[in-house]
Image (cartoon, rainbow, N blue to C red; front, side, top):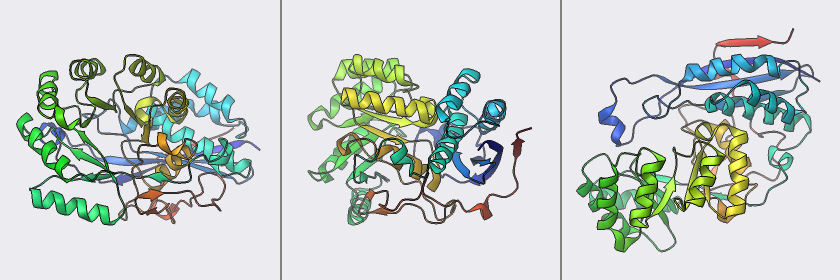
Length: 372
């Protein structure tokens, strides 16, 4: 068995824009796409992966970079036995630094293919499930007190108990008001955190957190850089969830050692790909730091992958996945359902990712690479 062909597809996607700092500040609105990777073998087995690269005003990456990164390392992959995935990944790592978006899609497809070659669900190839189900987060849009409460009640009725609240789009005093309003609405069992999308200056962050210190809120990535977030953590003692500034396993370790984070949000493209994310997950088990596993955006392919990954951790280390499935982009025919605010791999999960890709919506390939 050998890998014969790698095919790339680009599927347009409209992510939409929450009320964040980026709505007012962006000067270029790039078209976003989901880059889908299809890897075919000499025996007919197929592996699938995807990545939705973030707009470059949000993260330092481009969709074109993902495509060209995969094209660059294709000679390392083509002609290889897909069951020897560790050796293939070592070759990719040696040939390509950075490019976490390219590695996310390609490594996802390689692991899907490897698990199928062994006839196993991906979670079992990775050692089997530890958690039986995983919590899924919901994003609450802030409006008036009545509108916000109605949004909470709608999501609570669906079973959600983990909520991300967007702040940072206005003035610091408005964020103080929002945090106080939401905390009054929170129920004892709910986990709520506030995400300014790195919008606050250190001064803003200290001002807001000091004003709501009695509520002890959790803040997600308050400032642009890791160093700024570290200053805020040290000056305020606030509970912090780091997100985009976690750019690899070493940064995660540094944040643990410097006592900067309480929770880590692991975007696979930021961290460096699927393998780098799994390395951080191993460190999370050792250090006892809960994690969210996700990427900037995606579809049912990504949801399946992060659900397999999350099931290899104890439930108390899974802080909340995100549901990427959209009816506007039915990338897989039977996406994993989110039920009562939870997602679970079925007991009869098929081999690999366990989802069937809807090839009818992929369109014409944007690149094809074949073994000679």
